[in-house]
Image 1: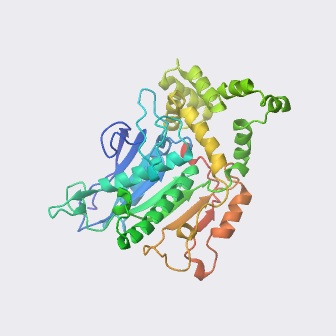
Image 2: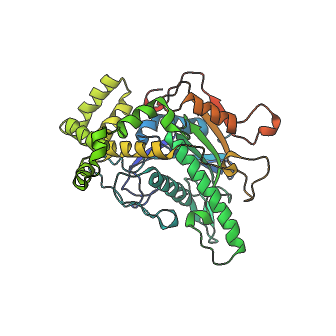
Image 3: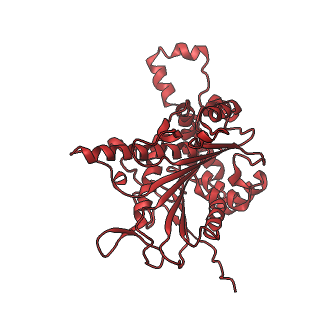
Length: 404
């Protein structure tokens, strides 16, 4: 009789609750899928770390992540010798109603977040990076000899190798994923310098932990997002042109103070969302959204919680405006895109895979084609070090998590 394959165990935890993330984590919701089972000998540990798009609610991706984890854990070749964790988190500022916003941890170089929503793109990247390495450190325990070892769900050691990390990002999450990879590569370079020079301090996540071996970018908005059809529309809405008489009025100091006190579009939209949904129970709002938007029940409930959250709408629009201003030209070098020569840091560069959509309203065809031409792998054998970039031909939409 063939052995019975257990389905993956899926645990959904509140942001302010117990580990794997401590209470100071800047997350709101945590999706964690782990498979614990006996294996014939030590297994290699893998962490599939997922970064959401905007709105940054991981609840939209529950079905996708659970299915991904099941395929990996049930794979006849991979499963016997490999153990997979699939971990995703909501972005900061998307706390559900009634959940207090946690304090924001210090960023790189002593940079600190404002402590309360809305958070910008750079601050979100700080949180994504922090949560990744915090989870990696949580995968290790101290053995009898005082050394950190990987353990499985039965308390058995899984081997001495550091966990391998694959970062997956959807939409703007792909941009954040590449930034996390860039910071990790810079940390490796700093570590190499620190080993030769005394007195060089490194962050905890740069001293030990996992190794990022790959990155997957799904419908990535990594360059010139403002040139896309949705980006153009959003630019007009978030930064409307002022009439000429308003421009002349800027010379009046009183008028300047008055205009600065007028709520911006993110604030107005946020207040409007609260006004329209405050007295509607989440269950009823879920059914309305499922009917009107033709979304699955789980996605509709996530949208309902998003609309009724304290800061969700404002956070989404604030972050979108930051994306339009920040995501412009290609921002990465050979340590990310690859090179024919080995990396000077002594650790192989992560392998990257990009999946673009056809007629993606968040990615202009021109910017997509330019990126593929400049950075993508060609048909020549000598270009295998370049990222693999493909354009979907099956008609998968940008928001695949809402129903595909």
